[in-house]
Length: 73
Image 1 (spheres, rainbow, N blue to C red):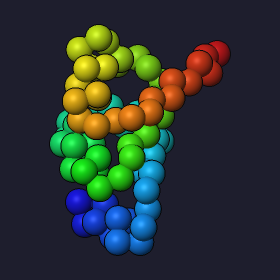
Image 2: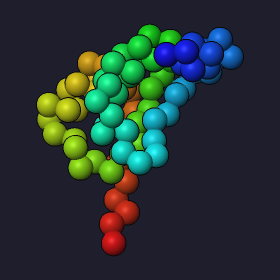
Image 3: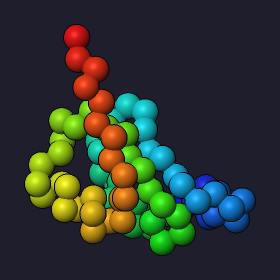
């Protein structure tokens, strides 16, 4: 949360979560909830974990933008 606070103080208005798969973090929804009180939240994901229930949790946590990659080999 310290980094989120520092970004907010630096007038950051959009925070994107990407790299690896952010939804693998057990605390990601708590992080989203905290960060969304200070700035807009974006998520880049491969979409594997997106279910209707997860989509609802993302919405409730304040995630305003979700990018799903379709880069499959």
